[in-house]
Amino acid sequence: MKKVLLVLFTILCLNACGKQTEANVKTDVSQKEDSKLENGKRMLIEQAFNAYITFDTNYLIDLKKVDKANNLDIDRDKIVEEVRLISLEGLKLLKKDNLKQVMDLLDREMEKFYLHPANTVENELSLHSSSIVLYNIFCEKEEFLMKSILLLDHSLTHIEYKHSLTKKWDEKYIVVLTTLTNFYYNLGANEKAISHAERLCKYIEDIGEVNDNEIYYNNLSLLKDLYEESNNKTKADICQRKLDKLN
Image 1 (cartoon, rainbow, N blue to C red):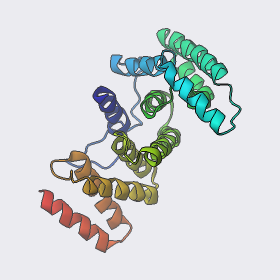
Image 2 (cartoon, rainbow, N blue to C red):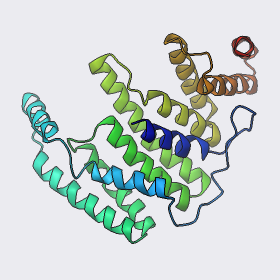
Image 3 (cartoon, one colour):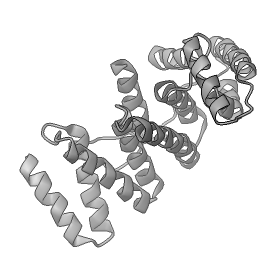
Image 4 (cartoon, rainbow, N blue to C red):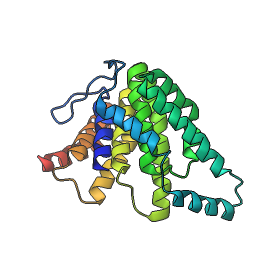
């Protein structure tokens, strides 16, 4: 699980373009990779597909019970078989290095994965990360950011729904909020970036993990800069005082 989070943070955050600071240096997403995948990224995509091929059938049993309780007429067995075939096709294309076709397949069939009983927050985020890896190869900067944001917004909604049931935040909450903050910022959607950065910083403050926390420091620094750009000196000064206490 930690390995997945590390890959996610590296792919989703460090590949974003943006303002360079000593604490947070980002590369430009317009710098294209070769059409060949590094082993770590290839493994991420393979694992994402495999999670929907081999899974705990108890998920299916439980989901059918939920469907019945809510009078939902959804053929989960049909969805499981469809997604299995889609995933096998994706793995076949990946093995042949037909990466553009893998990207198109995921874009076209993503909604079916959402209905699969194995669509946990972790599996969904791995699937989204697979698409984002491929967007970074084939899409220009703006398209990369916009398509990635759509997927990550969906992941955030999934995490929020899980929280409404369990009253606990998923460990990927910070990863998703951090990435959305960076992507909105690099897209020039500063109001959205501020909203997500505020939410992230407040969450880290609430759980008492501000010290020696690079994610908190980076987002607080970015939030200060965004407040300054929007001429909100009062809030920028508050951020600066918090940063001074961390130094």
